[in-house]
Length: 122
Ligand code: FES
Image (cartoon, rainbow, N blue to C red):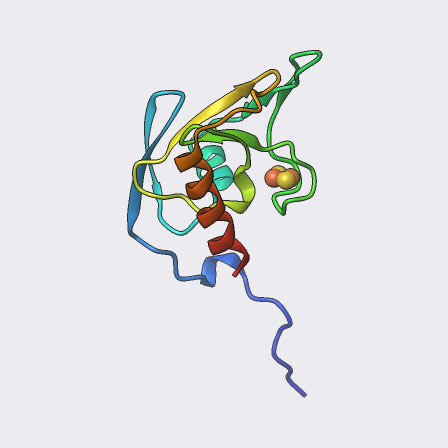
């Protein structure tokens, strides 16, 4: 008796050929559309996303599902964004987080951050 496999291989996925342009620490990157910021940075060879506030130890994504908070970056001027939960977008300006963040951010950036988060959760 033959049964269908429970899992499919990654190679069977149909990936988008569309790309988006963004930057990380002023370095221009071209990445596939529809993937998370963390995945895009990792596949571009970036493995240092932030430095811890106390010891300044380098950090990179660990869980890739919103649990560990090791993937925090600044996106379009909004700090402490979980890059594993945010989809890449054309023109995104991403910066590594170095040490502690300021608590004051611009109001229009907060609105953008809320919209991006709502899109991911719906
Ligand atoms: S990689 Fe763990 S929260 Fe983003």
